[in-house]
Image (cartoon, rainbow, N blue to C red):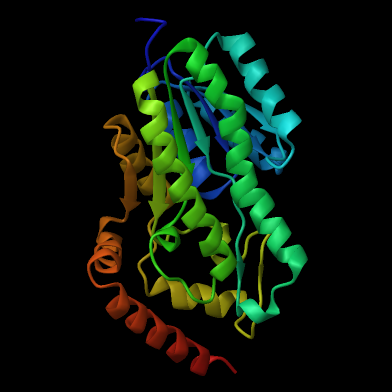
Length: 281
């Protein structure tokens, strides 16, 4: 097995941010199942350690690290320590993120600072710290988690959608620049996946009159996918070096409509959002 090329996935070393729950945890578990060594990085280090322990009990390689992705010095130290310990960095899954939902008129400047800091600056920090390492070793794959909300109009989650559009743009621009150097870049665009972020999560919030239970009931109508199933499909697409990875695949319909008939899709989404607002008490 060559030390000078990307491994997929046996023998690979991967860092997954936001790995304590949801998509990040699913990715970490599936990476380990496919033979990779995984660093689970998250502010919720106790949950991350639970996941890492379960991976080790199953015979995989994993360790948990407490990480605030908005702290670039901490991000840099994580990658440096990982490379010093393992000798390589095959994959960075820039997955940590939060959600702030509800009418944009209720968002504060602090809300904007927080979501931009975690969702966008956190990804930028990961790129800034991992990319030079990958350039030096001559291989690597950066995978940024965006959302289908980064591919189409998304009223009710405007701040979240803003960060996800930015991540798609960052990823596609970096892919074009990094490709000739042997570095791959992909962007994950999940539809609705059954994770804590659907109801705001620990670090997010939801403005408006919908309770967490009402919100989850509404989102169940969109057929959420399990994180484990998402991870299996996502890693197969990453191994193919797909650029924009939309899972579940039926969400591609909205992406195509936004490219072919943006005014039509915008009108449809606007009507659906107005209908939702009328259901609120």
